[in-house]
Structures are given as structure tokens and as C-alpha cells.
Image 1 (cartoon, rainbow, N blue to C red):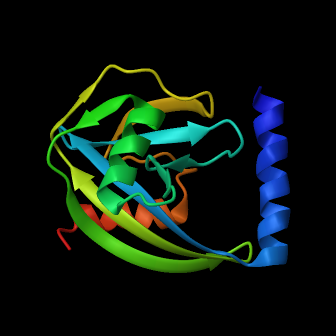
Image 2: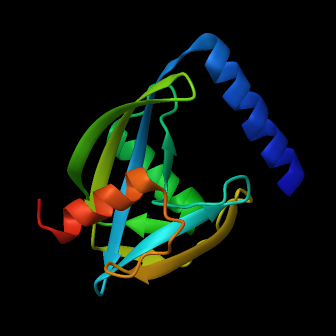
Length: 144
């Protein structure tokens, strides 16, 4: 299954470079006891905040709740918009909404695309945390 997901990710990256789509996505800062939840996908070596793309007719809040449930098995309490960002990578224009949540319950399973999920201290992130995600965590730490 891992190699199928790696191949699919590689093919999607090539497709994106050809079609140059505009996508909308979400990430979530799940904060508990001065720690943040990060995930590592089977097809990428970096650690990321949980999240993903919006499905058709889905609101930002619906998407972040679905992604939290799928990626880390979390049922979210109150969420608030933390940041909104636009970037261009691999030919994709990505509009990304980052949410903050401190009230949640863990316990559900993770999708097959998640190799590992773990809480890390806000001031001791893994060296291979994706830079775009690291900057969001630093922004939270600095109270911005």
C-alpha cells in the first residue's frame, strides 16, 4: 500500500505541473499541554500539521473536522481560524486555511496514508518538520 501511495503522489505532482491548478486546503494546530500534533505521511519524509484538501461543496470548517478525523482520529471541539496563506509549489496555487483547536478527543484510527502521528513540544519540533508548517507553529508560539 505504501508504494501505491508514493506512486500516486508522484503522478499527482507531475499532473499538477502540467495543469497548474488552484487548490484550497486546511491544516489544524492541535495543541495540548504545550505540544502540537504532527503527522508523517507514507509518501513524504517531513512532519506536517494534520490537514488536506477541500472536497466539492465542503466548507473550510467541515474540511478541517474531516481531515482531523481521518488523519489523527480526532473529534474536534471549538475551532478558530488562525491563519490564511497562499503559496505556489509544484505548479499548484494553494490557498491554505490554518485552524487552531485546543479541545479535542483522540481515539479513532488514522488513514493508511499516515505512517506516524505524534505530539511534539512546541519548542522542540523534529528537524524534518515542513518549513511552511514550522512557520505556522512559530507564529502560534509567538502569539501572533
